[in-house]
Length: 147
Image (cartoon, rainbow, N blue to C red; front, top):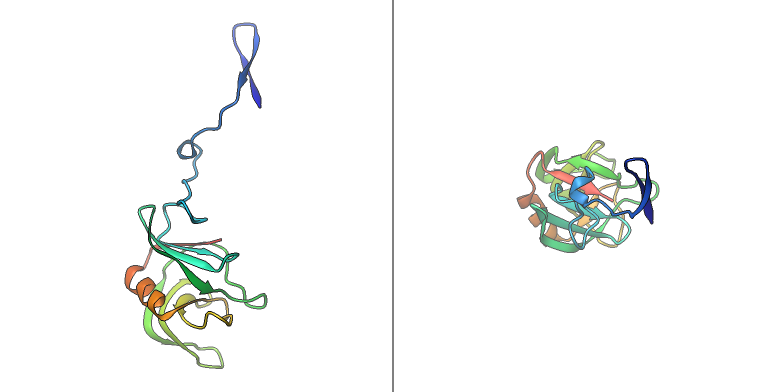
């Protein structure tokens, strides 16, 4: 690929170079994840994996997770931890327990302990040990990226 550069009355072909990621206004992706270094939690819906990150480094993961289904999908985007509840119970009709809940999206979407074989109502199910780690690590205001 080449780019045209105008000089003093001449047109010169110069090889185009990609700008470094830091110069483009977008943060670099953390190696091995689909998320940027600003995230503290990262979710990859396509591969059913999640990570805890700190200053662009993986501190836990990838860990298996189960997202919502087609009827109640886990929302995609950048969010922030809104609140946490270690012994939360769903206000859905089933009143299901949601241990170690970390709420990050409107509508009650959270990371929490749950089945890795069945979908939730948009939440991100984690195994017990991973749910505890996400609960203990993430703080209100921390960035969560879901891809």
